[in-house]
Image (cartoon, rainbow, N blue to C red):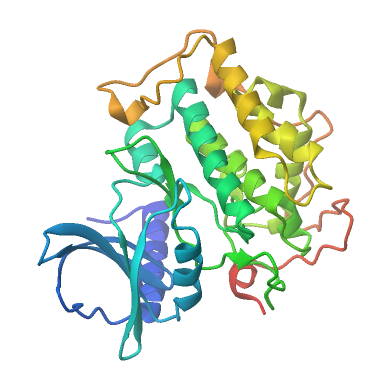
Length: 345
C-alpha cells in the first residue's frame, strides 16, 4: 500500500523517534526477587516496567535508565509521606543500568485523555485540587518538580489522589540552577523557562495550569507549533494568559493565582485550593472525587461549552515564520531550535 506524503512523513518521524529512543534505552535486567510482566512506558532516557514481587505477589513498577537516578530516589524518599507522591522502595544498579522499584500506579492522564478525548468540568477541577494539594506538600519540602505534564500525572484506582511521578529533573530548594537552559517539556514549560531565568515554586503551578487546559480542551492552543519556533509557543502562552476569555475556564483561578504570585517565593496553596472549591460551588458540583474514568460515560455540565473558547487577544498578529518575534520580557530571550531546546548545555 502506497503511503500519502503526510502519512509517509508521520511514519518516518515515528521511526526516527523510536530509533532515538533505542539509542538511549538501558539494558533491561531482571531484578532479583521480581518478575517483569510488561513494559508500561518508554521515554528518551529510560523505560518503566510492570513487575511482581514473587515472595509477596505485590505489583510494583520498575524504572530503568542509563542515567544515575540516585538523586531522584532521594527526592522521592524525602517525599514519602506526601500526598500524591508514589512510594519508592529501592534504588539499585546492574552493570551500566540504574533502576528504582516503586509503587505501582494505574494510568496516566495522557492515556485517559486519549480514551475520553477531554475531561468534564467536574473532573478537571477535582484533578486541579488534588495536584495543587500534592504540590503544596512537595513545595513545603523545598522541592521544585519542573516537569509537570499529563504523562507525569497518574491515577491509582484504590484512592482518589492524583500522583506526580518522574522527579528526574526536580531540584531541592538549595540546588543551584542546572547548567542547562531548560529541561522540561516545551508544551508545558512556564514562561520563566523560555526567558532562561531561574525556576521557582510558582512555575510548577503554571505548568499544572497548561496541563489542565489540555485535559479540558483536548489539546493546547499552541500544540500545532511543537515542531516550530519556541518564540511562537511562548508568545501564544503569554497571549493566552492575557486574553479576557481566559476567565471562562473553570480553572481560571490557577492562572489568576500565578499572575498574582510572581514575586512570592512559596505561594499559599490553600488560597488557590479554596478558590477552586468555590468554582465547584458555582457549578453546584459535590466534592465527591468521582472522576470521569470512574463512570461509564463522560459527565457533562450544560452551563458551559468548553470547546468554543478563543484564547487569542485582539492584539495577536503573528509575523511570518521566517522572521524573529520580539517578545517583551524581564530578561533577554535566547531562542533555540526544538532539538537544542531540550538538551542544550
